[in-house]
Image 1 (cartoon, rainbow, N blue to C red):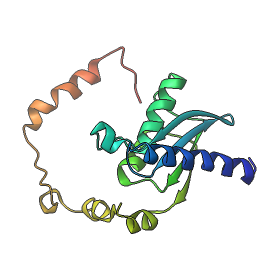
Image 2 (cartoon, rainbow, N blue to C red):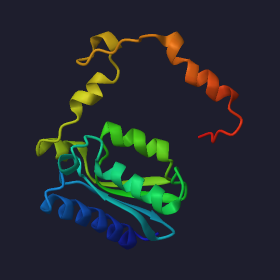
Image 3 (spheres, helix red, strand yellow):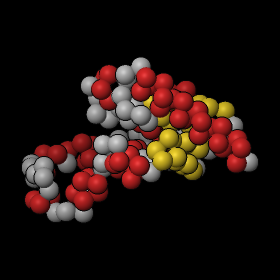
Image 4 (cartoon, rainbow, N blue to C red):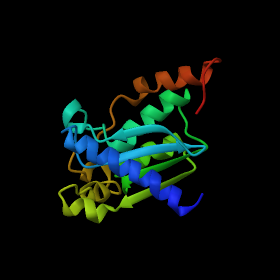
Length: 159
């Protein structure tokens, strides 16, 4: 695909960011998902309007694309996002399995306007007992029951 077409899709992501921001839906982030040169998913940040801290542009676009495609995976798709994905969105992108991601602005640009994810990047490698939000394993033997049942389930959809 030529750079001109890629830039058109990036402009669509930026327009989604501007529209959502101007409608007071959330922060200045937008995303589109493309398959076969057609937009199949669109999203913008809706954190503040939905009281959902996971409603980032990439996540809302992934949800939209998956719904429209009738699939929980985005193989054959390309994500265009107005800003480099945060750690949560990065994880969602890997779970969705698109072929490629293009991003516009980067994490430094986002930090410069108050969206600084650096603290999350610093927390990830820390041992659980050193994190600012303590993590402690509890009742593993009880929590393994769904996993044991999953192993036996014959009609499961693996992913």
